[in-house]
Length: 110
Image (cartoon, rainbow, N blue to C red; front, side):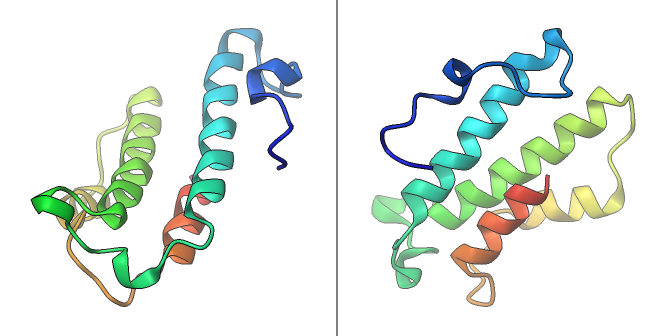
């Protein structure tokens, strides 16, 4: 992932992904690259800070992961599980045990 690479959608088709789903694959890959780029070197002590009362960076990373997980369930016509509801309820709760690295890894797993 270099700064001189074009955006993911300009790099061509994603192998193994049907044509109708190419935009989704491109968006997810672009999101992952940008999350990794913009969180690199981010100070851990600011992860759960709420600047001017706004949502923390930690919340946003948890929320992106949660949204993706829930949307994938909906796409498979599945109901949300109790674990998904619990995750949603806890999005943004300050948790010093959850690091930037963990949040980025959780997004990558989805």
